[in-house]
Length: 553
Image 1 (cartoon, one colour):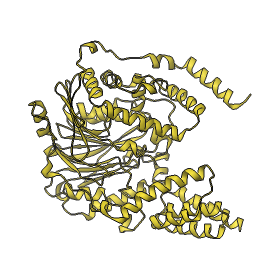
Image 2 (cartoon, helix red, strand yellow; image 1 turned 90 degrees about the vertical axis):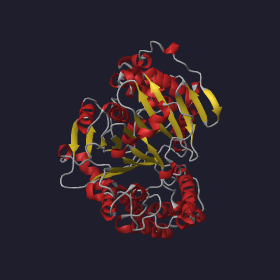
Image 3 (cartoon, helix red, strand yellow; image 1 turned 90 degrees about the horizontal axis):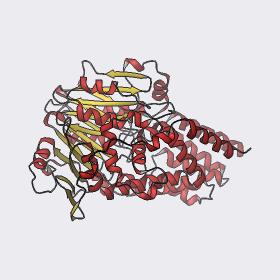
Image 4 (cartoon, helix red, strand yellow; image 1 turned 45 degrees about the horizontal axis):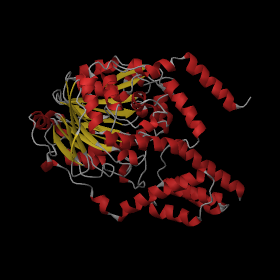
């Protein structure tokens, strides 16, 4: 009996006995959906409206979305207005999936596994958000219905962040954030900044949405998001509550519960202070570990809510004017947690934590402009050159977005492409909702005079070299995985494009090794080890390749 047949039997048992069919057939209450207006009016390729709901693309390339009403109304309006953006994200996500799993047979297995894994997901998502997701899903691409029906597929996508970092062991989401207040900031007000380093391919990060939501229940809020996503990864509400999420060290989950982005969304919509945020997070079961940084403008403080499937902690600094967060937990609840201690020792989380602390400590009187400069910093500890794209840097030249909050004034700055290096666009939440609710003629609702310019680095040869390096790096990794012969000229080009980056030397070493030029392989592996290597496991791989190369000589 071959292993594929065994897998087929296992899948059949799972499908037959674990409620998969029930979850695929589950739908929220959609009473009244037929009465909801779906007629989108197109004014131009960058301007649409549906009743009071509006979508406008500003000159920085960021879409500004306004939604109001109950859950079904918001979902339908969202889907209708942003249908092209939803299609773009679905195609990007599914193309990435197909690239990672090129075999159609294995994708069939993956489809069955995901259905099994998410069989209880609907039990952990509030009815309100299931209704909203259903409204959005009506505008998904039918071509992917064979993977999962539109509504179920959209529900799955909301757990992608959680599943991604669990499977990739943090490397997919190496986010870093900070908060500062009192004499650490220019005017003493609370200021928060973060990079969201979730990466699902270049296409996935091309389209960004600054969404402003006016729900029939709870508080008005904004979040920085993408097509089809109603969960929150970065946002602020009208009460001055900010939310950002940072992945923690997780064991491999066996079934989905509440996606962390929906927990963050619930906090944005319903919390007016940090105590209420804690209570909301406590009542939800999650299936991965995550730090939720919550800032409160009115309380003038920031805290970390640290959640995992089997533990819960809250971390708040004492006698300090700053709070730093990367990808490990800091509360007493996790002081003896083996996975958390392992993340501190082996991953790049502690290094980025120390670097962020260094940058915040060295920056006097932080204001939004200085906060953006911190988020854009590409160097290592003590300003060491560690190569472009190194995951030990605060700015890995990978981020989906950077964002800065000034919650006491209800102000926020969001980055535009590329990465978080483009212009940071300023929004005043009170002003934005006043404009939308008064039905003013649509144009960008940004406070343009407060925008923060793009980084000068974008205009340099170093940036052009890095963009070329990223493309070449991906090609080389793909060729190495397929055991395709690669020229030594490619090895030289990798190093010349990004000479301070350990992985450029390591990949070059692999090319020489495969070409049986073991002497040059050793030279390049040793050069890689001399540089700032990302993680302890990476160091061990380099050392292993050095030993193998010596044995071949």
